[in-house]
Image 1: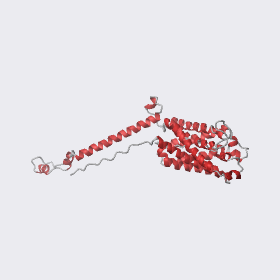
Image 2: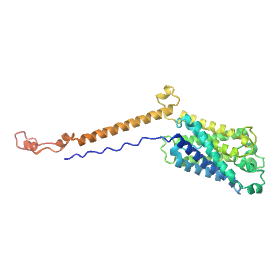
Image 3: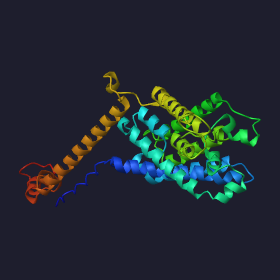
Image 4: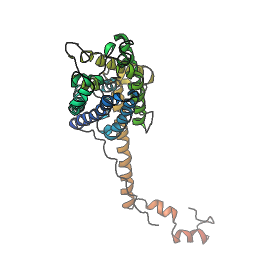
Length: 343
């Protein structure tokens, strides 16, 4: 019997991380597309006879799902400073990437808003009796009190206070970021995470849209505020309310991350006992190293067995499976006993 050598399987390719430039480019692109969808629909669809909150929610939900599916494998598909902050707290993102990600997200969102602002025709401004293009664009910005969408629809009869705006933005962002952290957990094994995240954003916009125009995303809020009336730095006008739409989403993301670490995170390893600054991230890295080491050992064993088979070092097994004619004769002539040869 001829024993054919067993070919060794090719080792799995080493996991490589995209460069920082590639990740920042993906984040800028993703935020650009998301702001283009949300603000673009909010800019023009509000002049239709129906409510524009539902179309904005649809655009945001579908947009974020498509963008995460397209470039999420490059950068993680955050497209939102609050999401990056929450993922950093639970060890899914690197703290050194936090500020670069924020900058890329704000730049991408602002570029989308600039494109939309440049396309507004002067004839539309005059037809709607708006004071300027900025006042028209201010309808896409986030705000409370006089700048709440319901305030405009009710001619100022229904207004939401700063506290109400703060609470709703914190809560919807906490739920949204909590969904992202949950569906991207390795234990969840969910193949349709982008769809789940899209539904979560859809629900968040539906809830907060009538109250604050639904921020949930500081980069989206900044993009609209830059081209709206008021002053970001003197806290005047709708642009002056931008600060709340950075504070509230970041607080909401922090609450979601702390809730996950307290109740849903995997059991922490010795990294926590040693006072590691990022115990969850350390545990994940340690597990990945062990898996890679085990895979390397298995491939080395396979190579060793293949070499032995090729060099003829399995002759004992071959002889045992196929006894020679001499051995068979010895067992049948009666001189060596009456037992038949056995394999």
